[in-house]
Amino acid sequence: MAQLKTTAKNLAESAAGEIHYRKVSANGQNIFYREAGPAGAPTILLLHGYPTSSHMFRELIPMLSGQYHVVAPDLPGFGYSDAPDRSEFAYTFDNLAKTMQSFIDVLKLKRFAIYVFDYGAPTGFRLAMANPEKITGIISQNGNAYLEGLSTGWNPIQKYWENETQENREALRGFLTKEGTKFQYLTGVDDTTLVAPESYTLDQYFLDRPGSDEIQLDLLKDYKTNVALYPKFQEYFRTYQPKFLAVWGNKDPFFLPPGAEAYKRDIPEAIVKFYNTGHFALETHVKQIGKDILEFLAALPR
Image 1 (cartoon, rainbow, N blue to C red):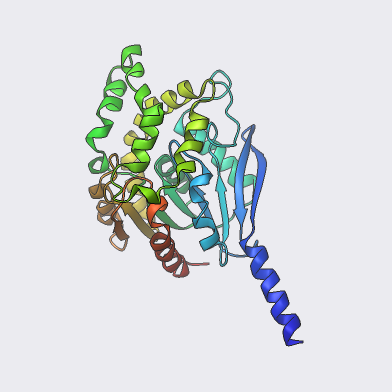
Image 2 (image 1 turned 90 degrees about the vertical axis):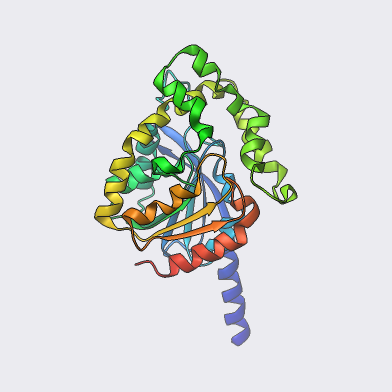
């Protein structure tokens, strides 16, 4: 009998660790997502950033899925989700959030924590403002909501916001190149041999698809709407005081440590942790970050 119980326990743990790769229709788009963990466990929604996909969570998901129901979608235009032509889908952050709202509605996610990174932050914060009753906690990994978090790396993008000429748009194409992608992954990393080459290689594969360059330039253009919403995001933080954990690569060339510290201005009990790495902190510090996330999640309301 004891052996049967042990076998059943091992099978349950094995099933909890399995990652399923699924697609669902949301806002008229086929959205790819990774799902793992017990269906009845507390849910955490992982939202990736630029120029990546849910692939960035490939090592974090197994760490969380033993105790939590983990859902990690690819945003429209990214990864294995649909990337419709710009004439058929508006590549704005409002529309990304609208699609993710449809996604959580279709999956019937009633209560969940969110992990937001880079583009996932303004997308996730829009969701949080629209669904405050659903949010059990927020983890921001280099996901910015404060002006002081923006580095000078944003200067050419801000120039485009101020003057939307074709010349200024063309000047941003360097962000879309193989060199630009590797820069995001490797800058600030002391030991670059820790960064798996398939990470930036896969991202570049999707960036190099026909039409992807214009999609990404549209999103860079629309990022100004996120900065305009910073005061609204901050008002949400002050009003709802969500449980909050910032896990931040302190050598990120785009989002600076003061942006992480600023969360404590609006959420005094926010926890802020820095790691000696760059923008894609999970590539080098997933074990430490995963441990800190599990400690944070354990204290959240169910």
